[in-house]
Image 1 (cartoon, helix red, strand yellow):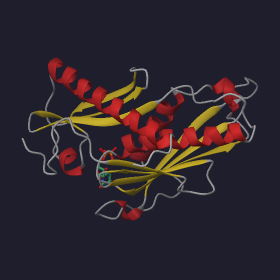
Image 2 (cartoon, rainbow, N blue to C red):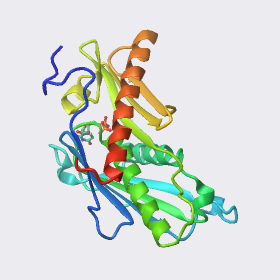
Image 3 (cartoon, rainbow, N blue to C red):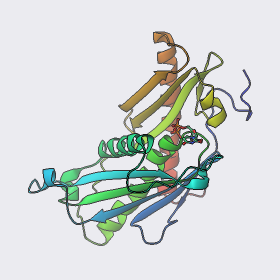
Length: 240
Ligand code: UDP
């Protein structure tokens, strides 16, 4: 099978992370992942949800939305209530980042992550996790510099990627055209120490075998290792 953008099965789209994109945020990244582009920001609020009050521990919560012109068919602007898909994605982003947080080091504060999709071409949730992680690390750096926290509240790395089966072939990092005809669609979140945070895999057009699952997880694992290396490079200020 030839992918219509010329990639091999195991290749990622080009990924670029532009840091410091939103001046008011404590940390911000514009992540460009092929044609998918997401603005990710991290900001701090000096209070916690009621279930954390008095525990000494903080919390992290995430929001996700698509701008109206992020999709070929205009997506109506979400008002007070986000749609089901956005709610599912914001919860995924929150879970992914909470997996690497040290909430004792954060203290009783809430980190707000916002992911706003400027252009969607598949993989917006995995781009959101990855971009938000870099924004979070930049924010944590600024909180340490300002003396708001003494220890780094980010205790590890996390990254995410999509994999799937298209034309009976397992592939890494599906763009929209592949996603829309994928037989199997999977999103994987892993930590920098090679552990899974989340695996969501659906047989959209047909069930998949244990061997196919093994193959998809191997593709994802390899892709995420490269994505985490790119996160490190972005945080080190290396040109991308
Ligand atoms: N999409 C769209 N309109 C929508 C939702 C999705 O055009 O209301 C497109 C968009 O390109 C998105 C892709 O479908 O990136 C795949 O959506 P999915 O829900 O699988 O999430 P994603 O792959 O973006 O994480």
